[in-house]
Amino acid sequence: MVESEEQGKLIAWNGLRLVIPQQWETIVRDKRHLIFEQDLHPLLELRWQRSTLSGDSEKKTAAILAQLEKETSNPVTHVKSSAPLGALQKIYDVAAFSLGTAGFPDGAVLICKSCATIILIRFFSGTEDWLAKESNPFQTLGCHLPQGTEPTWAIQDISFQLLEDFHLDTYTFAFGMSRILFKSSSTDVIFYRLAPASTHLKQSSFEELFRRFNDSTHPIEKSDREHSLVSRHSPHPLQYLLARLSRKKPFTWSHFRHLPEYDRILGLHLTASHPIKQELTIFLLSNYGVIS
Image (tube, rainbow, N blue to C red; front, side, top):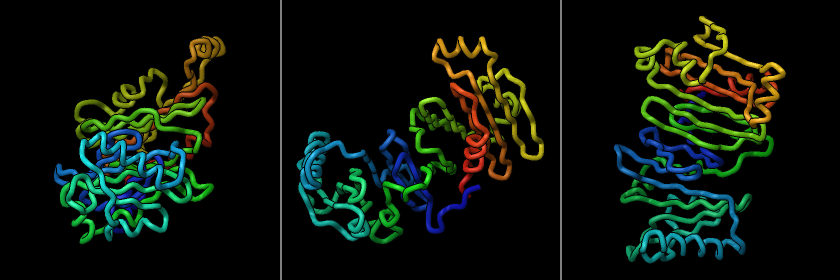
């Protein structure tokens, strides 16, 4: 279990972190693109990237706004930053903009003074007024962690940590199932979330779910006390050579945990080109949980 933020819901995705109101839902549009909505109405959009542009903040902002003007086919003009954006000015160079001639902010370009990350914020209709009255997520917005801190991820109602050499590869957020794949030079890690668990378990046994999602035919170790299943496989020497010739990762480790109190099943599946260290599996397990 991971403790929730006192005033809202923690979102930490691919280098960006903020706390949003509990009633907001998060839509992952791309690896660095999030949309927040409430009751199916979009409220806020965030896109970000590590800067590859040359020049100072003004030149970078001008390049971003020129691209935005092409995307929207609307004239983009600079406007005065509003109160909700004021919390950002200690950490970021902030340039608010308007799409059209309304004169009030439709969004802003942020450039981090420490790491040069560029963040594009878009407000949807009425969002800026709402932010002025309610909890302001920009007070918690950040794009880098203190040195020595492992990257934290928090999305939907799950949170986990990874070592720095892993990067996000693919993800799926389908009804009842989430799958997030990370890769390093030698190891792949998949995080699973099945919810509600009770619905899945009406259709298949816990062991059937485990084998289906991990594509496993290897022996399974059971722990009734922890409601968990574990499977691990190390290839024979010939299997290892054949796997390496075909550039496959023959070492596997899988773990599924049923959390009845949250009606969730959390899973981990690792494949590697070398033996999987116990320290890695312990680290992943101890930092993967439900945000309550």
